[in-house]
Amino acid sequence: MTGPASGRRDLDSASAASLHPAAREVLLAALDRGYADPRRLHGAGRDARLLLDNAREATADALDVRADEVTFTPSGTHAVHLGLLGLVRGSRRGDVVVHSAVEHSAVRHAVAWGARASEVGVDHLGRIDAGELTARAAAPDVGAVALQTANHEVGTVQDVGDLELPDDVPLFTDACASMGRLPLPEGWAAAAGSAHKWGGPAGVGVLLVRKRARWRNPFPGDDRVDERSTGFENVPAILASAAALQAVVAERDEVGVRQHALVDVVRQRVAAEVPDVEVVGDPDRRLPHLVTFSCLYVDGEALVTELNRRGFGIASGSACTASTLTPSHVLEAMGVLTHGNVRLSLQRDTTRADVDAFCDALPGVVAEIRARVGL
Image 1 (cartoon, rainbow, N blue to C red):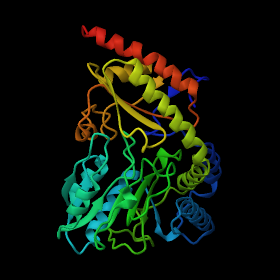
Image 2 (image 1 turned 90 degrees about the horizontal axis):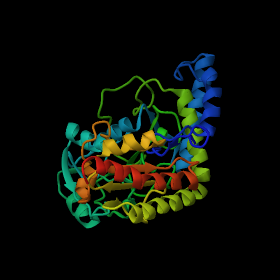
Image 3 (image 1 turned 90 degrees about the vertical axis):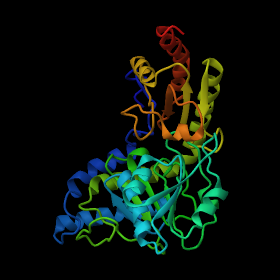
């Protein structure tokens, strides 16, 4: 990671994981061979098509789905919009989307743009009430249910595969935060992922649509062969993303256990060593690499800035609106402290020394910021 060599420690992989070595190698090799339009019949086009097909097969194999259920999009956000709204448009029941109060803004914005919302609350750990969600889904005008696989901000994993929905109500799951790190749950009709979160290049999303799903393109069509296609694919980046996904899946048992233990260290030390702090999210049923906590009487922007000066790259605010540092709708829905929020998300090569260095620095930074305002 960008740690000992540079003096900096990147602890914000949830925004963007560092490029996986497997992705870097494949990306460089594919730049010369995969530049052409994969729909063209000349030699360069056929080469690009072969690479694209290989990427689709590799992605499907890593995710345990069919290759013809995989579509590549320009981003995870676009995959969310396309997947969810496509289910709504294909529904014969209505245009209401039942979703949790802690869904990513990509889901919330999609619903606001092309559907109607029925929002279900969560408990203080960010867990959905499955009974209430199921009851809401039975309403006659419900076209789809949206439930994230795991939360982008607090890491809480939802029991997506345990939902007992009506047979004609499809389930969309935002798996952008978990894809590659955790196996996909069961029961979904459409799912979305984002390559830069698992160590692939930015600008590649993955849309999965089950063959049995009633899905219709909610956006203007394209002249591509795939009805879910979103235009000219970035074949080198897609191939590199598939290589990174394969590598991450192959190593996730070892990496996941190590990261889960490191996050436990952060959760325990922060709670014990920083006064007036609240560590949030499910302590056990969570993403292995992510932890969020909030500090009373501390401005989140100031905390990010001061920790950055000491060589730690972290995030603050909502996972989807961090640039504005507005209060997180996720934390508000959970009923936990939203002020002075910090999210750490470990890179694949984050070490115990990196974690301990952060925990050593944090209490002094928090005390210094509080002292500035007379606390």
